[in-house]
Image 1 (tube, protein in one colour):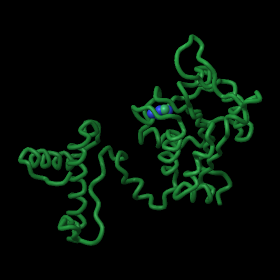
Image 2 (cartoon, protein in one colour):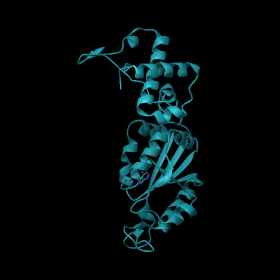
Image 3 (tube, protein in one colour):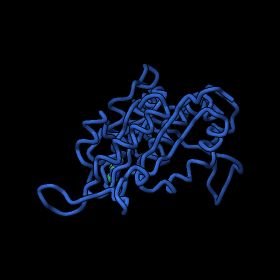
Image 4 (cartoon, protein in one colour):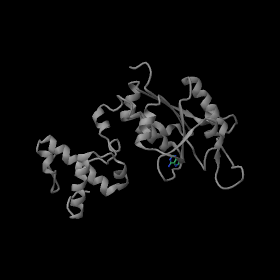
Length: 257
Ligand code: ADE
């Protein structure tokens, strides 16, 4: 057991029970092994009124409620005291910087993250300013609360911490790490419902298999996410494969999806 986790994440939320899934599977194992520490704090424990109020009406009027600032500041003080500092502070928000694999890598090296889960119509702006929180969005849609967003961020980030995922090669080969979508995968049997595994995968020819996979990754990216292909770093061989794929696509061949 390492003496200190490689990544500590403190989450501040009005729904601490929502984080139970982080005890399962890969992240649960990483926590039991001491590689990862996820500490969930109930925002209501940092309120001072009888009703444990975490929201209030917006100044200036308008619909919805706004999360109050003081409980977040009090929670941050408690975290700083326990953890010896605040690390990188994140506020989940649809107004935030888009969360990407690149940002997940960056966060996985931060050592300490504090994630504040937003709710209702928003969080008093002084939380982000006063705690120097970076707002992060997991996509261009609006969730009912920041808990799912926080779990997405924790999951994608923690699996990049060395040792959390047993098979390092599978992490290195992830889609997006290479700037391309993943190639198609198959397991036994060789035929299902009349659908056969591509012959090359049964050939035992490792070089041909690697070439086929690279080519199909390029084909998928071209068909499904041409925006990614623009930014992907393709070497000379990749560019040749892309030319082949483009030719096949024009001729209506290629198959697959
Ligand atoms: N809270 C509500 N929607 C969100 C989103 N898309 N990303 C992060 N936090 C959110």
